Amino acid sequence: MTSISERRLEQRPPLEKIMDTVFLWAARISALAIAGVLIWIITLVFIQALPAIGQFGLGFLFKSTWNPVRDEYGILTPIYGTIVSSLIALLISVPIGLGVSIVLSEDYLPTQIQRILVFLVELLAAIPSVVYGLWGVFVLIPFLREITPLKGPSMLPAALILSVMILPTISAIARDALINVDIGVRQAAVGLGATRWETILLVILPAASSGIIGGIMLALGRALGETMAVTMLIGNSNQLNVSLFQPSNTISSLLANQFAEASGLQVSALMYAALVLAIITLVVNMLAQIVVTQLQKI
Amino acid sequence: MLSSEDTINQTQAVLNAENVDIYYGDFLALKGIYMEIPKNKVTAFIGPSGCGKSTLLRCYNRLNDLIPVFKLNGKITYHGQNLYDQDVDPVQVRRRIGMVFQKPNPFPKSIYENITFGAKINGFKGDFDQLVEESLRGAALWEEVKDKLKQNGMSISGGQQQRLCIARTIALKPDVILMDEPCAALDPISTLKVEELIHQLKEEYTIIIVTHNMQQAARVADYTGFFNVRVTEEGKRQGYLAEHDLTEVIFQNPKEEATKQYVSGRFG
Image: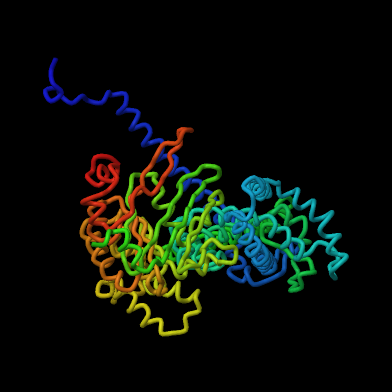
């Protein structure tokens, strides 16, 4: 028997080395593929949008005509509708979502009931958007007609449906952020004589703020791009109307409604609109990143 | 000559446990505690893991209320008032009886806000700048952080964080400070600083410190309670207070054989 110090260190088997290399390259290619797909899509959209960009320039963003007969296009109304419907949805679902996340992250409820509620909230995200749309058409709009001056599909029901659709995103992510706040921080606050509300509002929420904001931005991204339910409810009118009870349009609804019959310059105009939507969403995501990193620094 | 027990009784008791049993659900974790905590002294709780010394510590400011299955029988009085009476508000208890935790846990806020947090929720109307300076000086941290009060409390070293937590506690001007293994996560130099600080703090405060470090108990404590564990008939581990006396008695001339073995490092 040789002692352990006399034995040479064994080499790794060649097969293991090859496996390592294969794994490394598989990972690299996968990562590049994601970036590649994104760039490919944006480039193709951009190329197809070029004729419309040349024809209308930036004026495309500030005109509210959409006239395939005369080939005159502008997307002021859809841009306005996209942003307003999303902001109204956030206005409604942020406070509710935060409330839900606080209740579901504290110990107000028995564990069993809490677990069921968490599951139900997450289930909201699993309902297909066409089902939301259908519910909006046959339940929400008739209901709103009873209690508001609303006549039919318009901005209000679209924004309301959006708020329900993004609620699970906000509450699930905010709840995770709240639960992940270090227990020591909570004990410190309680130990200093903070009541439960003071602990939640002054310590736990600020400590979880970067996660919460991240969730809100993700929800906003979803609201900006949501197509099916909104298209069924918003009325798809390109006339600019500030009233929430009047039909409006969003960029994604415009695309969904028009692409089938479009030809020539209209296709190019739709691609231009798609490019604008992609840029809006991209900017929102980048802002979210910046806000989150800033908050984490504090 | 007075026996050591007389000395305890002669000093004014701030906290007094009378026949305290502590349950987690049906499980009796700590049984039959009688213990007086004298004013402006440092009392150390020592004993093997699982003897319930931290559990008892957290009873003094009702922090165990956060645990749903926790139950306490018996009485813990604070200047004669039972802390577990129905009409006692635990929030008020914690404003008088502060706590420093095992792991430094500053708020993810600035050093300044860490200190002012307690004062703000108490409706403090005085000068915040003065309060911050006083508290940080009281915790022997002022010189090290006076130029970075706006920095995040979590950006300073572990030892500084723990002194920040002590500063945050004394900013409330409490009566009693509970310390749950305050040096467990600190290096030896930081530990020494915190121990020096404890010596200064007992001029104004009554301090209870839980520690696994027997040298530390010997260095900082005036009185020491040795908690031990026995195994019940059902095979469960149950804590009890084995001996409570002046620190030098516990370390040099204990009455109980178990205490002697523990402090000489033969078990635990």
